[in-house]
Every structure is written in structure tokens, then in C-alpha cells.
Amino acid sequence: MVKTLKFLFGVQKNTIKKILLSATFIAIILSAIILVSQSLNQQNKKIKILIVAGHEPNAGGADEFKAIKERDLNLQLSNILKDMLSTNPNLEIITARDSSGWNTDLKNYIETNSTTIMEWASAMKNKMMGKVDAGKIELIDPNMKHNNATTNAILYLFGTNKWIEKNNIDLVLHIHFNSNPKINGKPVFRGYCMYIPEKQYSNSTSSRIFANYLNTEISEIEKPSNMLQEKDLIIEDQQLIATGVYNTLKIPVVVVEYAYIYEPMMLSSSTRNIFIEKAASSTAIAINNYLSRNK
Ligand SMILES: [Zn+2]
Image (cartoon, rainbow, N blue to C red; front, side, top):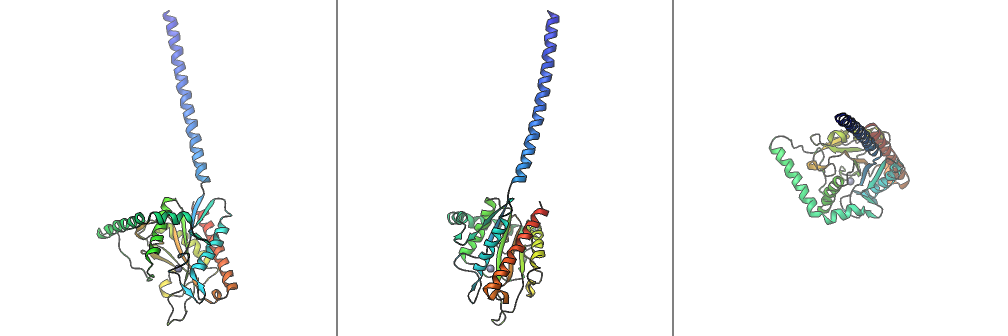
């Protein structure tokens, strides 16, 4: 009897040991499977890019020269760029507006959350001013004086930043064409430049890397700006809402001014269309290079 018990006990102990061992083995296998599928998911996750054609669909802010409206050029470039980038299956391309107006989701979000958006912007401002008072951040005046935006434009710019955060966008590009200032009313400037967040902002370094890729390609199709305040070409700015004033953006962002709208090649539609086409393809190449080398 004692022998039998001992034997049975022995068997039970072995069995428990075996069960424990195989449970551990199964657990290891399962966690390995989970890890592999997580990393596959990450690899399969599309990179979300937001293209913002500068200014509002029908009004405000945008520069005009003769019959050329900046907001229309921005949209033309945005539409072509979207088509070019959409051929990359790893990217999800979202535009802030298209030929029929604002992105409906963005517009609905902004229109129904306007109070929350502006409260968020002012809370972010207070947070930054607190750091300024504590001597942790230095206020930097921009090189270039920016045009004052309308109340609605301010709401849409901050709203876009908040919407970017809410939708986990990975990269933002703002498309613009330059115009002002002219000297004695005469259009004398030419060339491209870019704006990125000032170096004390958390997304400044990543934005500069992105801007460098854009600079490499755009310098092939357009001259650098000959305006003194734009001589850096990649210009840090602490106050632009588009580049995330008060740290309202955490992801890489660049505002590109592709050319002055009164430059000779912009005046006739045929040469302008060729330039915009080239600008879009340079940008698409720069984005693809940036993404493939900065995973
Ligand atoms: Zn503009």
C-alpha cells in the first residue's frame, strides 16, 4: 500500500512537473507569436501623411497676383502630390482640403469643437509661458513678420493641429506660394524657402531632417529665395501655428513656400503647370526618401 502510494505520488509529481514544463513551453511559444504578430502589424501599419494646401477654400489670407490666387496653386500642387504619393501602398495620404472644399471629417471636427480647440490652444500657450517665466524657454522673435490670420483661419490652424493629434498623423506638409513683400509695389523676389518649428520645440529636430530632404529635391527645380530674411532657406519659427506654436504639434512638420507667385514661370498657365508638376514630384521623392531612411 505504502509502495503503491509512493508510486502514485511519484507519478503525480512527474505529471505535475511535465504539465508545468509544457505550460511554460506553450506560454513561451504564445508570447513569441504575439511579439512576431505585433511587429508584423507595426510593419504593416500605414504611415499617415497630412497634406495641407495653405489657406481656406474660398476666402481669406492667400496672396493674389493679377488673376493668380495662391490658395488655388496650393490646392493644385496638393492634388497632384496626393495622387503621386498614393501609389505607395505603405502610405495613407490625407488632404486638409480638395477641389470640393475642406476635408469633411476635419471640418466637422473643427466646427463642433471650436470652443474646446481654442481652450486647448490657450492652455498650451499658458504652459509654454509658464516655462518662459521659469527661464526654461526663451522667446524668439521671428525673422519674418507673418500676416495676421483671421479668427477663422486661426481656429482652423489650431483645429488642424488638434485633429492631427487625435488622428495619429505621422507627418505634415503645408503647401504655400510666397508673394509679399514687394519693393515699391514691384515684384522683385524669387525662390523657395521653408519654415520649421524653432529648435526649443520637441518636433524641431525631426522637422529639420524632413526639411533637409525637401531642400535636396526642391533645390533642383527652383532657386533659393533671394530675400534677406529667407536666406537660411530652412527657417526656424516659434510663432507659426502651422509649425505648432506653443508645442501644439509633436510630429515632423514643414511649411514650404515653393516660389513667389509673380515669378516669370508662374505667369502663364503652361509654364506654371509644369512648375507645379515638378514641385509635386520633387516633394514626393523627398517624402519617400525621408520615410525610407528614417523609419
Ligand atoms: Zn500662403
